[in-house]
Length: 137
Image 1 (cartoon, rainbow, N blue to C red):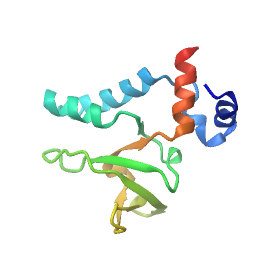
Image 2: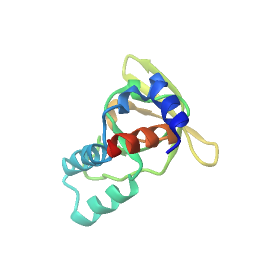
Image 3: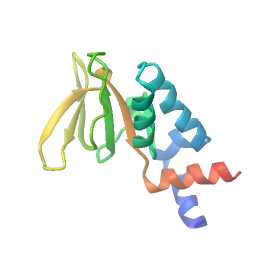
Image 4: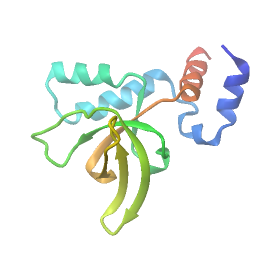
């Protein structure tokens, strides 16, 4: 393990939300939130697999411009689907809530409201190193 990279990752204040979390805790968080959706067993297994190296985000402060996310729309419980990957381009708020502007792979933009979705952020390399280090302790 690269000690310099680990030190840099720990000193980066944007990684504070992941300090003291293990891979099993992150997996458990995702599985628990997916279990609440009462998905079929096969779908649950598929979503857990697709969300490897992701973390469930329940606080808007854990999202930044440039993060890669997947989401599940929870407004219509009859149409629960895991999205593709999208990049966060902007985060704003208005009287209706927190608005996240996302970019698709083909440079199209659209917006979602944070409170209408379960959001899963792809972990960056620093976050992965911190998780690995804490699992080794």
